[in-house]
Image (cartoon, rainbow, N blue to C red):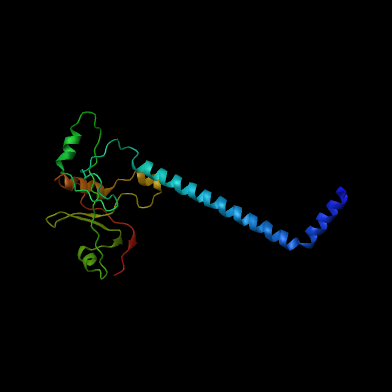
Length: 188
């Protein structure tokens, strides 16, 4: 069989089954698109989380935490808070430029009927309140000083809640006890 005859048979076969050829081509294209999309999505998520964790620990050289027993389940791990005096001891170490005491445990109040929100005068969500162990309100207002900001701008924001918690946990009076909250209004 000559080349010309082979080419003729191939053309006739393609013409006779053009629908099948188009369907197979589309199936291959869609399949390859899904695989490529999955790889792009996975790489994008990986980079986003890598960047996020890098930014979170960007200027942290040392983190002091309470000890836990070896072998404890890390999923439900709750560390006990360390005494505030440890922050003073760390600050006294030569070469320490700055310390930032933090609290990882939190309490969440679900106020479906708005009773507590009305009691404290919550106007926006979020409207942050810090109450000391004696029940005294030591801070009320916004989380930080950036009302509208991109992720890059938020890095330079002054976090009012973190500052107030740090001062309160160190036994000092809160220097900025109230700021103007911002966010969506609360509808009671």
